[in-house]
Amino acid sequence: MVGMDAEVGRDVTALDPDLMQISEVSPLALKQNPEIAQGLYSQWLTLPETSRLVKSLIEDAKTGAPLNVTGSSNSTNAAAGTSLPSMFPAGSAPPLSPRSTSGSPRAVRRGAGTGVSSFGSPLKLVSEPVREVIPQFYFINGRPPPKELKEQCLSRIDHLFFARMDGLKIHEFKSITKDICKLPSFLSSALFRKIDVDCTGVVTRDAFVDYWVNSNRMTRDIATQIFTILKQPDRKYLTQEDFKPVLRELLASHPGLEFLQGTPEFQERYAETVIYRIFYYVNRSGNGQLTLRELKRGNLIAAMQHADEEEDINKVLRYFSYEHFYVIYCKFWELDTDHDFLIDKENLVRYGNHALTYRIVDRIFSQIPRKFTSMVEGKMGYEDFVYFMLSEEDKSSEPSLEYWFKCIDLDGNGILTPNEMQFFYEEQLHRMECMAQEPVLFEDILCQMIDMIAPENESYFTLRDLKGNKLSGNVFNILFNLNKFMAFETRDPFLIRQEREEPTLTEWDRFAHREYIRLSVEEDAEDASNGSGDVWDESLEAPF
Image 1 (cartoon, rainbow, N blue to C red):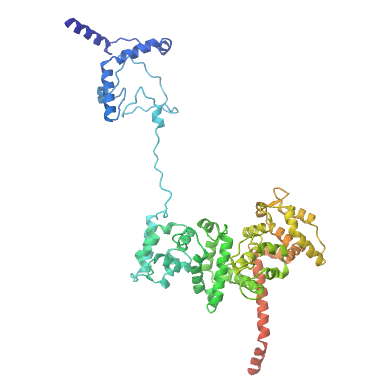
Image 2 (image 1 turned 120 degrees about the horizontal axis):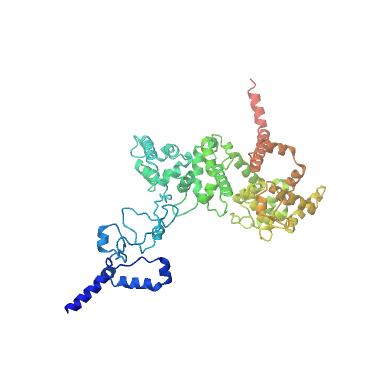
């Protein structure tokens, strides 16, 4: 037994890595003689430290403890516990080739921390994701205001609510709307009711701070602020009804509309007309649901701010001009002979001194360009007329081009072919012959229109072709409006000079201005003729 124990001791001693004298083996020799590497590996597996390490790793795996295979380490504890036993005597390990500390993804920083395993790839350090803190950039309720801005706002709020700690009433709320919220003053009633959800008739300081400051509404853009104030809580869009409170307050407070306060019927018509014009230009989808995106893309916010600052409402040409309303309403009243607030085909044919062809009027009443809201078969209501008139008198606008494009596109395939255009021009040609005008053949007109528009494909026109050209409106005038067609052919020098002098005005602005002057002169003349007798009597009674 003693001899056997001695023999085992000799075998164990022979396997001691410190006593194993293994000469250095070049990589080439290992490659040519793989059995040498296999023998070294087998020898390493028989070492007692290897056996203990494997058992330790198995136990850690069973208990769920993290595996810690660190290889060679500068740490004394790591070397004593979990380091893999080396096959090479101390100091006889082959040196690693020198590596650059920059430019190579394999470069490993050897610092004072935990060492890198000689059996693991140094690329693992590179593959680990780098955590970068990205600041929050989206806030569902708006970006929180900076501390300094918030303090300034609260200071102004305290000043306006001073001595009114019980709250402000609706007629006292304009200063809050204009000075604190920087919104048009005629939105104050809508803002007040948005905060006063319980209809108490009073808005306290704390209620306003919660709504405007603590909810981060003060940092949103003005379009979003107005959209949020006007829309209903359960909707993501605005309807015509949402604008009525705004127009009521505008009529009650704007100095340029004071003269209408004694005529509530015309106040209502004015408000309706403004709303119809807003939806005609801003609600590009045409579904009666004005979205936040449409509100931001349009010019309504700028027009509202202009109306709030300008005392002369007629200088606010976008949407709010009373003169523009007057022209639209008078035109409708002239055509509505029975004054039932509905007009039919025969009424519309008389528009513009019989300027339109029957074929285009038929297309309008077929409701191809836009469904009527009158709910009466064969009749056009006031809202429908507003859309028609804005389209007819300003064919440079996108809503107008879309309106008339649908009318001419007989088969609805999205292109205007020569056959479709000829169908409408035939009636124009017949009317020119009846008026003893020199007829212009369609072939010549078609060449002229192609030269004007320069379409991508000369065999047809697309809506994109028309929207990209300032002369597109003349195409539609050629096809169905004889008066404007003849004016275009003669190149009225007065209109040309007017366009050059006022390039910022639209076709609608110029038309409305001319028509308002004409209607005013006619009304003044009618008033003078009706009251001439009274004027004469007064002069006789008061000669001095």
